[in-house]
Length: 463
Picture 1 (spheres, rainbow, N blue to C red):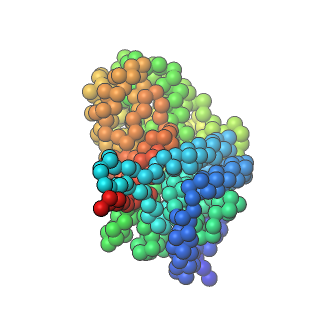
Picture 2: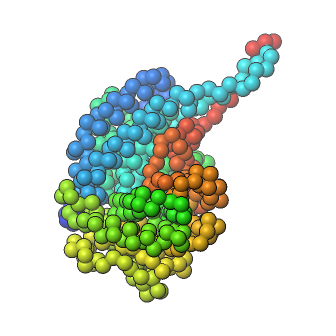
Picture 3: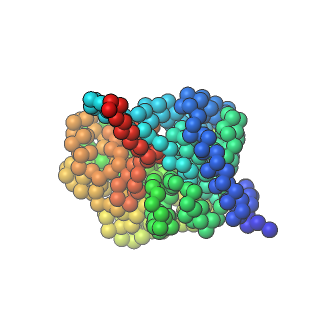
């Protein structure tokens, strides 16, 4: 009997999905199909690829209601918010489809008498995508759609928490007429995933996950000369300058910290506030946090659902307890959130002050509904705090001065720098990180460079 994948819903602890895990013969057959299909797919004209993937997006969006509800059951985000993932998927997919001709156009060298010289962008071959559960469509679309547009075949392995997401891709692409074998889904164990990416028929890996997962991937690929894009998380900071719009900053940073129960790699996990605004900011932040409703994510008025599993919530509770023991003050009483219960995925949001960087909650990725807020006296102090991290995915400044925002951003070690915005990916901009947040790039025309290889043509046309 085949080993089984079982998805435990954080909503009520029930088994929501069961699927057999792919065995060696199934994986072997999938790779064989991918190689054969890619040889023909790469020759399909760009316009036909665009039309086909556009139809796939149409088919996917038409399933929004069902996709949203099953996403809530799989990973716990409130049903009032899960349709936003489909909207984000559509925005990114349509942008990358439209950008493909420009990103993949031939690059002509400067004129040289008697010669024609240019560079083509060629597909890599078979791209393996290993996707996470927290934003299962918004992480995977960054690689799946541009990989296909560039002429690659794709094998998608999704998290065991969100296996239906991979299947919804397959349904939409099949409905759009994508040739068989160009896109395939495999539900696999960790061991089988490792064997897959070590197979010589896989030409690139796009991985989103934890830092330990990134190290495991790097070790598994140590004997191969293929590229691997890795998005490994963050401890993303925000800096509220003295000239910030206080109410606007509070509203957006509360959402940036607690959306998806804080389970976002680019969510706000630490905030530094200029001393002149500190007291008012903390008061406003706590007041808005107390208005959240933690509860059953299938209810329309819930805006804070369970974390993905009880162990994840207990990890964050441990960070909070350690910080309080070391001198931090917690400003939210969990008893104000009746659904909060130790040993369950349902955790109340928490705001901590009197924190510093000796505490795990300010340095270690939390991936949960907790925020630490520190007072700073200057831009210089804020920059030092923001850079005091092993991560560097995104960071934000809240200010009325765009020139100051750029000057501060030039000194912050991060992949994306926001002014008066956070926790958002613009598909026109490169999505990348520094330090332990990963390597490589997705989205924008730059993202296509990682899913193709350059091939130079040097033609002597006059002899």
